[in-house]
Length: 417
Image (cartoon, rainbow, N blue to C red; front, side):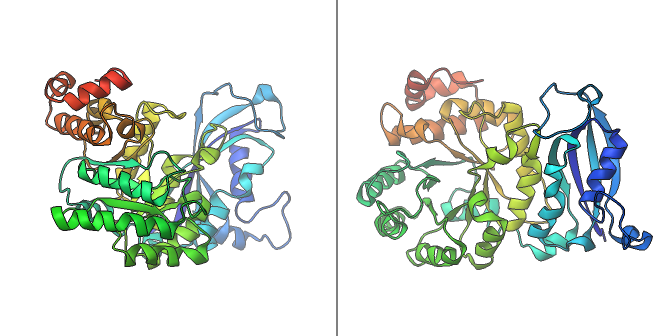
């Protein structure tokens, strides 16, 4: 049984690379800036982090982090693997983070330091249950056994009254949407509080389910202080809701794990604020490492961004993120990658060609709400495009058979192939 965690970093430093690796390992385990009396050989043997691998990489030309010391002309870059004894923190994600992503970002000898991956032992899966519903459970709840799961975000993000929201949800449900979510900006504000949104939306969805046998999933944003999460979840559950949403970075991993232990509903994990910890190549935590922590903590759906998005990530980075979420993780239930940001029907073929799977939740905000023929046509354009892509047809085939997709192209521009 593995009794250690391996953390992989990309660093830049003016120190010899081997020395920089030792500084990092020492600072995050038994060491400090000088050898102290009780840092005995036996203590170091049991608890000191060890350098597990070092691979030199080309420099990027990026500026060093503020406060970096050393000769800039001597800077080198490397991928480091550091092995941490599990006994240092146990299978506890908050305490793990203090070791693998704590003061190391402040070491002045490092001109760059980014945590890019984590290899975790089975003890973490024993402690953390991971997703409760995942791909299969979500498909069951929305009555969509195959094909891409298609959804949208309430637009405008904030400003609709509960009654206006209910009307919009009715149109989307009638159009055949699988999934609707609150925007991350819509939490529990006084204009449209959570309880009022639940009271307005759930009768619409319940009536739709009674008449069709299908209930679209609505992810109510229950993000709040930790002591209010369970109450918020219970309001959704008692009204017949089938999903809750949390902003992972604002409630924290401990908050996410707290509600996972108590939840009877799928958890839609929004990554709002993720750019603050990952956008810089010089510092922070890469998505590959971060998504493992989110999945272990219990999210069933996890945002990855989408191709041709409106944010900073390249298509290659997005596809790597989708692949990361689809990779097995310590035997936990597979989570659903959530594609969003600038998605519309014209991206279906390119996305499917690159990903090769429909075990995805594709969220189209403006691509549905901004369709020239209304939200129902927006849903149609997404459904027809994804069905065509999964069937192996070309974009031209889809355009020939789908008037809704042709109209979307007129509004949003050419489809990608």
